[in-house]
Length: 562
Image (cartoon, rainbow, N blue to C red; front, side, top):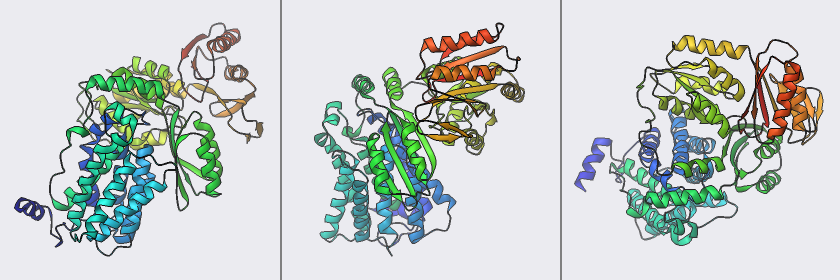
């Protein structure tokens, strides 16, 4: 133990019970950093059952939110600090696993906020609170997951205290050791893990976090991963991913309802009826929602009646798993996030949805971030993509009016890179702006030319109403197709083709456009798209019309005239 004592003395003052006196910010930051080293390995485990993202990455982002909030709220201690950590975990939770982690944190914090000292009994009680909150968050708990691991860790801590153990550090070591043992048992409890030859990724997260806590409080190094906790070989991995691609279902949908007003039970029941893997977590006047659904718009529209929505994120799990099936095992030479710029060429990052649109942007030299309407990418996701370009100057195309402000925030997150935001408000507009992109040009001049292109565009889009509403003085019925031209409602029709034709007539009233591009998304077939193209030619025989298969959800058609 001499080495341990020396390490503790170097790291900070000893509290007299084997743990260091370390402020909350340092503890959270250290846990976040330690976990960051394990996130990629955990992602590799989480390939089956079908993921709603990457467990390791989702957990890392959740912990990052906690770390950032604690750093902002300096001077907090005791109950106020515990409440801040709990709230930050819920606000920043990503994915099903991240939401459950937020409840583990919440349950522990509810115990710690009333504690006068972190003794062995308090630590055991905190783990018991974490277990209780985690299980209560899930309507139908499944054993062999992170729920089992936190339960086993809590039981081990309680039993240690009952045996007379008084050192909180030793209780934490016992809990972490049992968490790892529980992780290794998860395939025995969950058949899908046994068949895939992996342990539960979420469960490993719990064990790694307990390890990190023990390490930062003792000055020791976290325990190394056991061979049973590593990812399967590449051949098996590819087989697992290809199978998961066949099983993928719907969109992973997350959002928060702020200022919630209404019947929580009624709200929860309706959300549960709309999808699978549902979590509805109330916290005062905030409700965090996670679900997998084929119709994100229905869930979002319903929830919007109970308060203001924020933190909306929609991921196409079917597209995610198809991409994994095509590239299991990882690619060599990927850029390292945070690496210094390595290229003198101008880079470009575009937010986009739809496989066709992604291919179009990539063919023109853009790095694509999945996101757009009802699936706004975070500033951190955009910043990561900017860094991955390796460029000193990067043009950023938000391609949605709700993403423009987020794009502007990226400047605060990336050092050593000049960000040029071109405020595109649609995918079609972003593709039009790419015509002005020149990776070898002067960054300021290229960005200026792209902005000039955008200023002269007319952008139109057709979508389907998910509920009855009155919009700009017009009655819109659920199921009707609505057309917007530069953000203004100009068409309400029974069919997508009718709405598109009405939009075209309005868009081309001014005889000043040479090219019209149609991006066909889900809900419009090729025949309808060609009819719209034909109508455009009748309105202006000299107009060049291009029809592209964008594949974007929610919007059967986007158009841009330039």
